[in-house]
Amino acid sequence: MNIAIDGPAGAGKSTIARLAAKRLGFLYVDTGAMYRAIALYLLDTKTDISDREKLKKALSYIRIDIAYEKDVQHVFLNLQDVSVEIRSEKVGNMASKTAALPEVREKLLDLQRDIAAKNDVLMDGRDIGTNILPNAELKIYLTASVEVRAKRRYDELIQMGGKPKLDVITKDIEQRDFQDMNREIAPLRQAEDAVLVDSSDMTIEEVVNRIVQLAGERRG
Ligand code: CDP
Image (cartoon, rainbow, N blue to C red; front, side):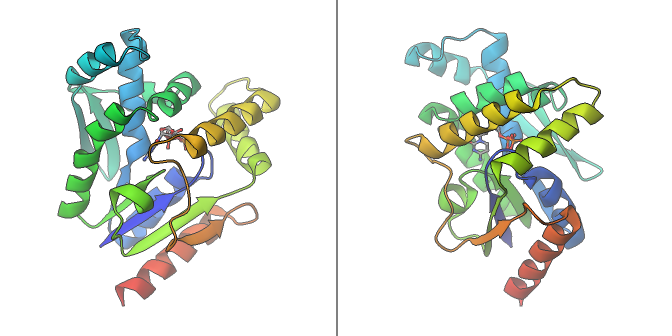
């Protein structure tokens, strides 16, 4: 069985998807981490992404692998575990930019479909229900208001010991939404057959329960 969860930055997809996958005994696949790993490489190598030839060449040097340790996904960039480095805002913003490039999406398409074909997966991203797994048995579009998403990200960064600014984070999220929803290739949008879940006024527990319940219904 395949479950697709799509939605904007900061909707809580990864936290919720991880917990729901655990309850269902599914593999949790965080596709954003794959885009982030590619972005990290392009940042580190200072690749000029406006130059198609340079981009293609850089991508040809990239190998992305996914492995699981105690149910936690680790992402490897050219055999190196980059799971921690890819979490910075800088990499996230670069990922949003580079994920709009067709060459980048093409590179990850087969990897994502292959994992879904071999396992019961709960896969989260932006175009999973619309593009990667159009036949997923359950599709969720998970969202929340910009204010709520910015506040969540803010709290997360505070917890990590950072000194974030709420207005900067709000602008970042708005910009990322715009980029993700308005790009030509695989833009973020709710699939016609996706269930809309707005988590603005829901706890994590409530959202997880809802997804597990929907999965149970679809499984029959
Ligand atoms: O954690 P957050 O929701 O902020 O982002 P993420 O899921 O880690 O993804 C980082 C960026 O990768 C997003 O802003 C998207 O532009 C891009 N992405 C994508 O285009 N398609 C996916 N399936 C997953 C991520």
